[in-house]
Length: 228
Image (cartoon, rainbow, N blue to C red; front, side, top):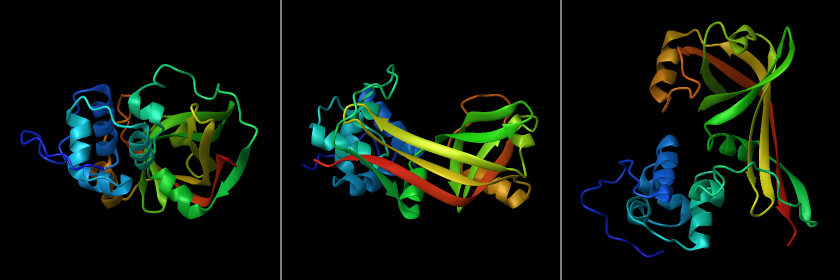
């Protein structure tokens, strides 16, 4: 990719974005804790080009968009905003589709690219699946809730945590499932570290300051790919 001079008024690493693409790119990059240079290394560009995409009304080629989106753990539609108001998964399946298992290393890499997942727990009223903002803390998956929430009351039980990504354009996708015991985080040093590491507040709002963590006993994943 061509190197683009950096705009002097926008230092590298500062989240900006003057178009929908630029804002989505910058917000996702910041959520992952990546500098422009680090993102550029992931997708075969340099930091100046990432700055250009964030700060200008750029029209990158589809191949460039695909590489940047993949480096951010997104689809092209997610990155450009084309899927913002569309229910995923309605495209027609291709006949050459194959379901391929993912190894644990790839599963953990994918877990690090997302910030919202679903936790499945058992409650007195039956099974429940709830979306949560999460972060990866060493081997654990951590999230905040309220002390009175059903997820907090599920401490000490086995739960499942799932994330996925669906691309309607290519009829592909992947999912990762982690199963393990749910526990409350009580160590003050660990709580302080999680508070410092978290890059956003829970989207659900309210006083959600009670940290919980899932320590996976097993992690599995699958990806839909095409033979051709």
